Each structure stands twice: as C-alpha cells, then as structure tokens.
Image (cartoon, rainbow, N blue to C red):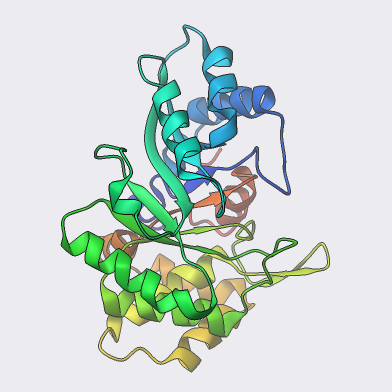
Length: 278
C-alpha cells in the first residue's frame, strides 16, 4: 500500500556530485533534469552543488530553464566563499533555494537574505550548543535547520544507532527542523559495500516514535527501531500512517541528501510504498 504522498514529497535531495557518487557536474546536471521529468519527480528535491561549483553550473545551464539548487559548503569552508557562490547565481537560471554549511558562531550575520540555512551540527563540546543555537534561531523567526551526517567520511566516523537516536530525540524535544546527509542510500538498515548504513524507513519510523513520546523519548527504544533490519516490519508501519502523521514527520525531517536518488526510490517501489511506479 503506498504511503501518503506528503511523506515522500521532495524528500530526496540530489547529491550526485558528492562522494561516493562524485559525478562530474555536467553529468549530474543532465541526470538531474532526467529525474525532474521522470515518474518519481515529486520525490526528488533540488540539486546539491558545492559552493566552489556554482560558477561552473551557471555556465553549464546557460539559457536553460530554471534550476533549483542548494549551495553546500562542508564544515571549514570560509563563509565568504558561500556568500560569493550565492551572489554568482543571481540573475541567472540557477535558482538558489537554500544554503548548507557547518555550524559556526556568527551565522546570523551572513548576508544571505531569507534563504533557508542548514547548519551541520558538530560532535563534541559544541554539539548541544549548536542545536540550541538552531532552536533559538527558529524561535527568532529565522529559516534555519540542523543537519547531521549519517554516513562515514575519512574525517567523520559513522554515527551508530545511539548517536542518531539522540539526534532525533533532541530535535524532537527542541522542536527544530532537521536535514540528514550521507549514508541513507537504502531504505533498511544493513551492511552495504562492507560498511554499516542507516535505513531511510528506520529513520522515519524512529522519528515518528520520538514525536509520539516528545516529552521524554526513550533513546534505547529509538535505537532499536534504527537497528531493525526486517523491511516488512518497517514497510507495514509507514503504510499504516494517516496523512497527518506523515505530515508531522516531514515537518521535522525536511529532506536528506543522497548521491544516487533512484536507489531508495527503487527500493521503496519494490515494497509497494510509492504510487505511480511503472
């Protein structure tokens, strides 16, 4: 049974140019336009492009139709580089619809207008302060979100079920909107290419559970849902959601980045959770 459409609408941002896919920008652009014309177009969000690639993207798009893009800067990227990338797209067919960068003090002073700003939350001593800072920003009426990297990199150890559960718990208790990035290539928790990966359905089910017990979500219970490896159990859970439950989950989880957007969509389709599949 397909899930409510709003659960998947714009859920998977196209991160084709980022590892491990690492597609050349010209190929990523061509494939993104194909995604936008495919039966699953409603599930695909904007194209994610590094700040350093915006000028090249503007040249590639030329006089083509509008292209919705999010500028992404890994933690440590100088803030002026981000501002310059946004400015480079003004007056072109590249429509910047958001910015993602590492959390840093002074983010409120960035001249980004009313663009949504997604701040990647660090580990260590600054973690809780960064999450609280995002909460304060949202309460101030700013369009700011928190982001967690769910996949491993050479400088970022894979966050296990407990760490991801704590992030979902804290986001729920703080009432903040979040994005995820990296590692959610499959819909069920498993080992892929020799590496542990979280599952998209696991995340959705765990977030729903946290929201139902928002005053004191049980981290151990959330971690157990994130560790579930039976696709039937997870599929039956989300297939039973009503529209309001799906909308509530997506109010918190706005989207996530995936370098192979069709991977989770094909797996969702195989579980009969997507409407319109051929």
